[in-house]
Length: 153
Image (cartoon, rainbow, N blue to C red; front, top):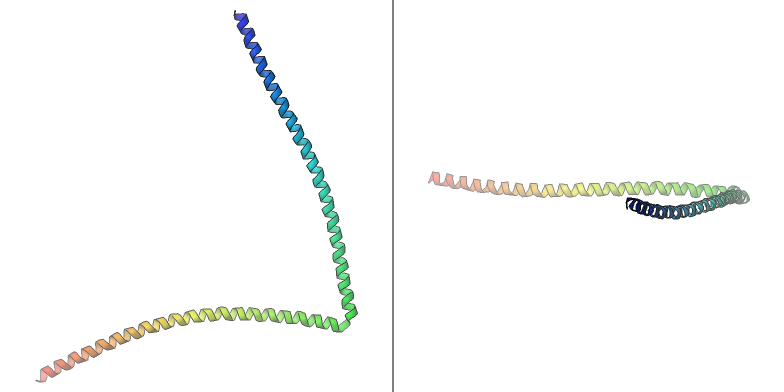
């Protein structure tokens, strides 16, 4: 009976090991598929990199051609065209400088306006305080006059 139990346990262990082996084989197949997909993606990335490099070369050629054509246009227009281009650039710089000056002046104006508002508020408070003091002085003078009048009677 012990032998039978031991054989049964061994058979159960073997079945579990076989099931585990099958699961590992399935995982290995999935990993192989992923590795193959990654290799394909690497090839695609390499091909796209080559296409990007070719595109960059074409852009460089187009930029050089454009610069050459601009130089030819300037050459055809001669001195007059170059002078006009220079004048436009100078005027653009002047406009930029004036815009900066206007912005600076607007900021200064806002600052001065805020300071003026504060000063006006302070002035109003001081005037109110002065009026209150003047009222007190009048009241005290009236009280003094009344006391003087009472003293002479």
